[in-house]
Every structure is written in structure tokens, then in C-alpha cells.
Length: 116
Image (cartoon, rainbow, N blue to C red; front, top):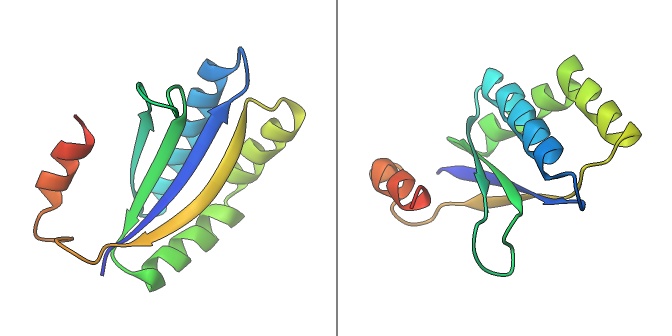
């Protein structure tokens, strides 16, 4: 059962590039611990300009292990300290979803739809 974790960053005025840089840094940290990660910027609709980090895990057990490793990683701690000193975005989430239909066997189709 595939699990998806979603974090939404709503950049503060004038801080979009810094927020995107930090989102990419967080994604690298997450990937280093085994998460399959993507970073998106919303380009249309009411959420235009928002940055989203989506991470995929094979199940809740693996997702929990990875998230504990992420939280205790010194790079994550440094990123949070930078955020405290110089905020760039309002962070929402993580929201956690469980795929209930067409999860593993249609991964490439799902990824191609997400990249449209």
C-alpha cells in the first residue's frame, strides 16, 4: 500500500526563490533517507505560486522510519534553524495519503500525469 506525504509551502512576498531553494534542499534530505521525492510549483489556480514537496513510501512502516530519520538528520535541523532566522514560506503539512486504487502497477502513468 503506497503512502504519499505532501508538504505545501506558501512563499512570503519576495521570498519565492529562497523557499524553492529550501524545498529542494529538503527534498534532497528526504531522498537520502529513501523517500521517492518530487518538488512542484503550482502555476495556475488559487494555489499558483505555492511549492509542494511530495514524497512516496511503500507503506506506513517505511514512511515512519524515513520520517524519523529525516527529523533527526543534522541537515534538517540546520534547515529548520535557517527557517527560524529568516522565514521564506508558511509551511502546511505534512499531509499523508494512502493510495487505494491503481498504486504500484500504474506508477509511470501517475508520474506522467503529475508532470503535465
